[in-house]
Length: 44
Image (cartoon, helix red, strand yellow):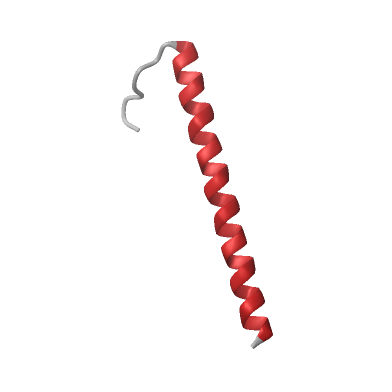
């Protein structure tokens, strides 16, 4: 039973880290776009 719980914690931790990484990328992209004056990317 302990192995199952730890596997779940590992999986959840990885998901949280991925979520924060994607969030930071999104914020950095938004900031960069504002700096460059680009409003929208075509085809994205």
